[in-house]
Structures are given as structure tokens and as C-alpha cells.
Amino acid sequence: MDHSKSQTAAAFVPGNAFLPVLQEALADCRGCDLYVNATQAVPGEGPPSSRIILIGEQPGDEEDRHGQPFVGPSGRILDRALEDSGIDRALVYVTNAVKHFKFEERGKRRLHKKPSARESLACRPWLEAELAAVHPQVMVCLGATAAQSVFGNDYRVTKQRGILVQHQWAPLATETIHPSAILRAPAGQRELEYRRFVEDLSTVKKAATRSRSAG
Image 1 (cartoon, rainbow, N blue to C red):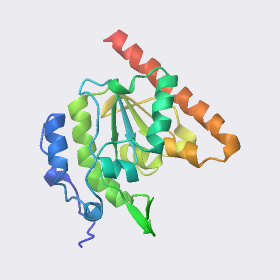
Image 2: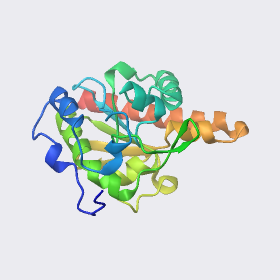
Image 3: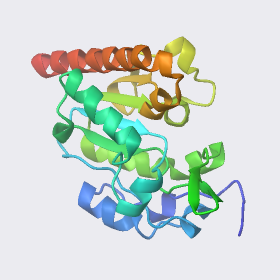
């Protein structure tokens, strides 16, 4: 395989396309080497009228098998947090910065492996196309990989978490932790991390509501 830094998905992304067209084209993406071992590409999911877009890192094992984003353990945490913050997931567009599952095999298990900056950059044209099709009011990055894909490699979650800023892809953008970080937290800290996550999403809810009123 060619591991050139010039790898990009740009040639596979239809221009000015609606979501169904993007989702169909994604299945044939060869913009980086992750498609070789993944079961399938996992497109975003949600209505094109979504005012909020949530961007995760990449599909996990269950997402890779089912072809849908956030349907595994992290997705269940996200569903609960959205409900607790008053956000209807059915009205939110959910996607990932990287569309194929990157993993390493340990016996019969497939363990998550963080995408490289090169792989995130290669997949960026898909994310840009999704955002252009959805036109969200608030863009939320879940975790460092998504945040660095959107804001650049110098972005630091610990310093800028929960702060709403302007961005070229959406009127407002922010970052919080990935739900998987709650699952990985020590047992005594999980509830605190979860409450902070809900607080971040509640801030997003308020911002989306204000933008709707202003519109």
C-alpha cells in the first residue's frame, strides 16, 4: 500500500451533494488504507435539517458491523446524555471524523486503535461535505481526534472544552469529551465525568435554541 502523505478522499467525494448521495458514494471510498480491513464505511446519520451536528472520532467495533454511528457502548452513553440534556437524538446529525474502523486484533477481539493525523486529514473532505449538506447551527466535536480534525492539531481539550467559538463550517462550534472517556474513567469518577458531559450538551442545547429564536 502507498502510505504517501498526499492520500486524500477528495476524489471520492461528490461535489455539492445531498446526504443520500454522500452516503452512497462513501461505500466506495479508498482515500486511505483503513478501508482494507474495515467491514464497511460508516456514514453519518440524522436529518439534513439538523441544527446540531455531533462529530466523534471513528466507528467502533459494533458501528463497523452495523454500518451506523454510535450504536455501541459509547452510543448508549451518548443517548442517555442527550436525553438528560434535553436534546432529541432523532433531530441531531451524528457522524465521525474518520469513516472506517481502525483496530488491532487480539485473539477474536478487535481493539480500537486511534487514527493517525494523516488518516484524519485524508477523511476530512467527507466531513466538510456533510457539514455543507446539513448547515448546522452548532458543531460539537466529541474528543481530541474530532477536535483536532476540525480546529487543527494544536487544539487542546483541557483548555478549550465547552467554549463556543465561530467556525467556517458552522456559526458556533465547541468540543467536549468523547463518551468513551466516561467508560474509561475510574469507577469513582464516572458519574462526575458524565455530569460534566451533560452540562456541555446542555450548553449546546441552549445555543441551538437561541440561534433558532434569532433566525
